[in-house]
Length: 463
Figure 1 (cartoon, helix red, strand yellow):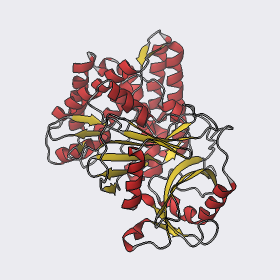
Figure 2 (cartoon, one colour; figure 1 turned 45 degrees about the vertical axis):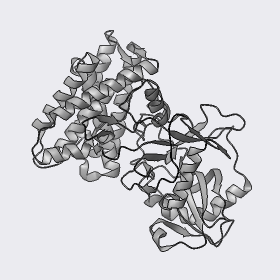
Figure 3 (cartoon, rainbow, N blue to C red; figure 1 turned 180 degrees about the vertical axis):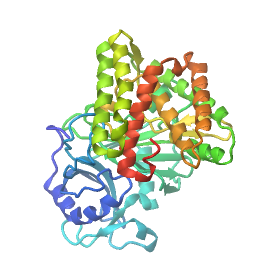
Figure 4 (cartoon, one colour; figure 1 turned 60 degrees about the vertical axis):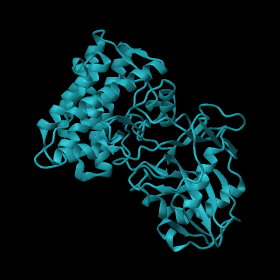
């Protein structure tokens, strides 16, 4: 992680070496593994912590492992316009250890270890074991340290013991466990040093009394620096928040309404108001900055670089690149003429799937991690709040393109209603900044092209 990072012990190195052949087969099959399509050249241990000793009937091993993979230019086009050099992604693994695996845990099997410290043991994905998932909740209920791991909680939150755990299967970049339909623990799989926005921003919003975001009840981190922990080295690993059991995913709700030919503008308007409330709370909690000429031109240039990189990686994008570039050039021109904007912390990856509607019509917003492919430092930078608006407008377009024929009028109505709702709270309609909004929507669509080409080629026609 850094020169001051904790150095792996000989035991940790031997432990990972014994798991190496099993992880090479298992890891690429996981939905949250970002390195699909590239061979694994090496594993490097970062930390290993026994949360439950291997001598127990079921041990629990917490690992942070760096995965080295060769660069494939067509797949590794930089999202942020930077160099494609990859130091290797670090992943959080929770490994169960048993002599034999009961039939109910067969789907969680990683493999049987034949040598090293775990020789003769069976290892498996621990989140599928209710006993081990329950142990993780107990660690979160009782703040303190366990090796390099640091467990913290909001002392005003009531976290009962004995809640029945169940893993969720629908996520891609992370993993989640629901406890008794009361709390949900989100585990960050690909981790980097620094404060994860998915913990940082909900904590600030809770302190502002914002009711649009479930407040963190507990969380845990790894202190990767030797000696005292520093904000730059503490690595966010997971956050426990209230589980909105009766709430409905905004994406699924929109698709159902669209399929039935039902109106969605009322919900879109309410979503606009919810977004503006979150932006107002973030602006009150954290510093805002003014983007002047140099900053605006820098943003436009970064967008242009992302377009160039994406067009190199996705040939289908190339015919559109000259036209798309004009959106970024127009933004740079405005900056050169002296136009400035206020920037603040934002959600960073706002779309219908990040919104939950309760039965009483209240919208909540979740998943403040930002676009996972972008560097953490970039995700934590202040942005024009219209960036989130652009993400939601793109999401309405995605929903409209989910069936045949594409429902362009439905999308246009939802987009307009969302902006009206936003203006009702913010006092300013996002459409009054057409050049900025167009540039941000275009940049988002370029990001989508790269994502779909890598992960869902059948969806590429949408962006």
